[in-house]
Image (cartoon, rainbow, N blue to C red; front, side, top):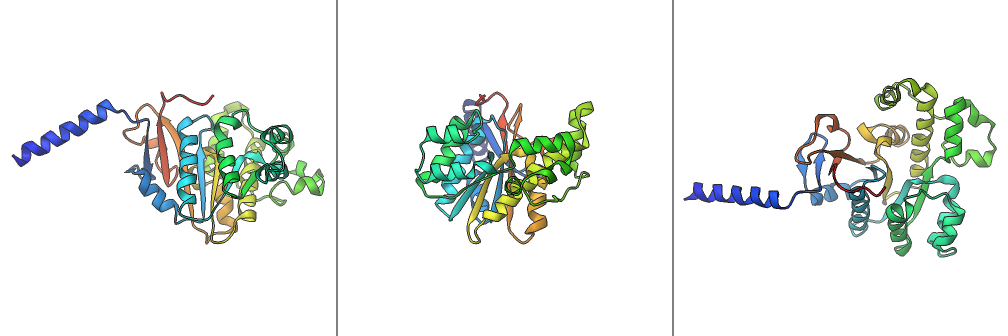
Length: 283
């Protein structure tokens, strides 16, 4: 009878799974499925979290807001994002303090096209709860200068412009696997200067995270997954400067099936959000 009951329970579980397909699952670096609650419990113990997204993933953006709310109920938190560039910090601060409206922010800051649907909820949560929100990215025009002319192009900038990026000269290791993968991925369009340009973003985001991090708080940072996958990019710079802080990373990937973590996605982060590739994107 016990054996029959066990078979019945398994059958009912399989039937329920088939009737309610999952849009996503969460895995650890080794490919073991973990619950959302277990992830939150681990994240709440960290100092700095890098939440790597796919920029058009509706699931990732939903979870970013959900995780932010969960962690803010447990810890004093502060937020930061790649999607707002450092020279727009003043405009962002004015919006957070109610000095300007959303329309004012739209006209004074360079917001991404998907800001209203994907990032405004995070900024507005910070505003409603008096949380600090740091614009961490290097202004795109300076990363473009490096792409064209290398790091030396930044030496020509004024001091004010240099204040919107990591201090010069920026540390750089072109041999990091993620940087090497950029060259392979871009094929004949790849160049050492392209990787340097990527590094200016990673270095600057790490710089502003640490510059604004308050001891005892939890700093939750949102960035494209490639900037922190495989514990490199931003995290490489963070650990160079502050190796004793507790870090955790999240990555977002898409797969044809969310029932297991594919080999290529193992070890991408402490937590890997696997989204069904058929889930609608935000753009």
